[in-house]
Length: 109
Image (cartoon, rainbow, N blue to C red; front, side):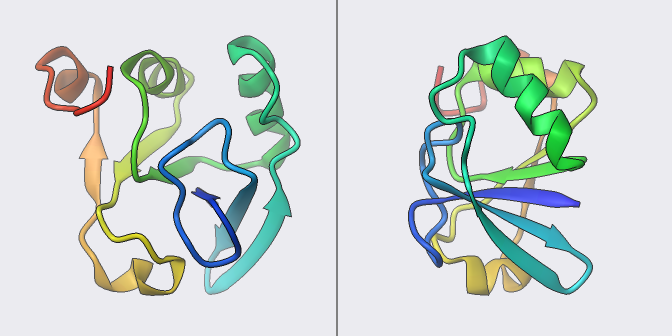
């Protein structure tokens, strides 16, 4: 299952942890939920993500420290430049890896 942070029901958020909503994508089904973890600190936020049963996360922006924590926990991370959830299938996803973090190729630190 994939998780996508949202500003509203349709727009991918530039804020990962503080996004008001998450889209949970499983096969062809999309469920929108409130982000109950948006006020949690890193360790508790990671615990919250585990309760959602996801294995991949698609972001428009993410800090290097948060990305590193997620990658070391085994999540797959992807960056997308398109702002709309409905178009997600039709745009390329850029994998985020520990190597791209260490090379400084992510825009946010």
